[in-house]
Image (cartoon, rainbow, N blue to C red; front, side):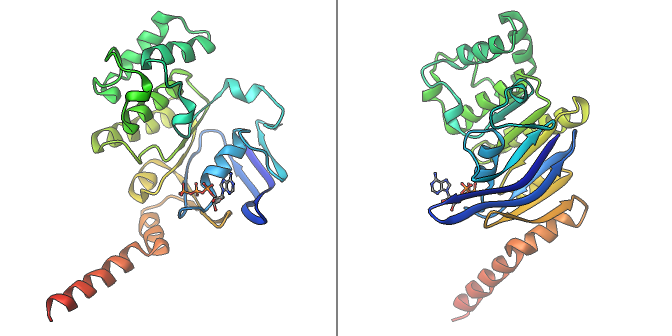
Length: 248
Ligand SMILES: Nc1ncnc2c1ncn2[C@@H]1O[C@H](COP(=O)(O)OP(=O)(O)OP(=O)(O)O)[C@@H](O)[C@H]1O
């Protein structure tokens, strides 16, 4: 489905993406993790032809995304609020997106009805413009717009970051459903290792632009990632410091 070949992106003399080769097969669920500045969003942007690489290429179904159009028909993504149209209400925006995919109002309404739980009564017919929604509710609109498109490839950049725990739970079920029941290939970046290992069968770990680990998710993946990020370690060190201070 996706082949990344010899990809490099350089900003101000610093290589921020450097991926010699990664192949993602149809139907895979990919989690992209890595510390701040690791290059996750830049990689997403190159895959979506929002920015151009300095070297190399990204092929979707064998076609270089840079300059091609066909991939836009089967790819849906939400990276940030820049994907939305601020002066529209959510329903105006969602009808607009549905229209781009040859769906009439009734067809969009039917799909939106299926998203009612995910929207949690905060999105549709609330008399608010997208610009006035909270970041989390804007994210729901963006994800909703993706789902309307019934994409073969769904890409979400840090979708769990601003949404509440109930919505996180619902989004995880949506992602699993898209992947298992609709055959979608999903790529989700996240700093939440629990969510990403719960939802994704394969984890790509980026550091300084390089994919340094490519792991098939297993029962040990979460602890392996926690160890890499030093989550357990730093928590323990911090507790020891507190214990020391409390004993003085
Ligand atoms: N337009 C730009 N100009 C200069 N440097 C940039 C630009 N866009 C990204 N970078 C740099 O590229 C590197 C990778 O950034 P990127 O946003 O892809 O990381 P990330 O893994 O998504 O980080 P985060 O987890 O913080 O969202 C960073 O050092 C960033 O400062």
